[in-house]
Image (tube, rainbow, N blue to C red; front, top):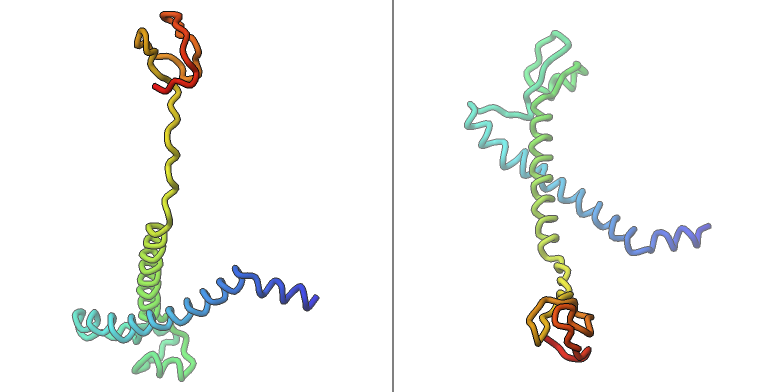
Length: 150
């Protein structure tokens, strides 16, 4: 059983998937930092110095100075500011993945179109259109050489 598991784990696609997951997790952390530390502060500044990560609805009825204070007190909250940050995270990750897949698809070799095999030719005597495999012209009844190329 251990041998079977080792064979399964060492297959190329399993290792590729594991590497992709690890890189994806690291990329997710980078995007989260980009959103919370770079993108949201200017947006918050433009909207009147709002810190989106501190926006919440307090369901407990008691006032708290910040989301951290409400969480420390164990109050029930709806953290819509964190949700907005997460949605922006998702949009950035989805857009980057879209761009990546688009580039990969462009880099893939386009299948070469097979040379078109002619199915018709002209009779050299009467210039009628006839099938390529014809050995006699149906219009002028001339005998055609099968090795002759038109």
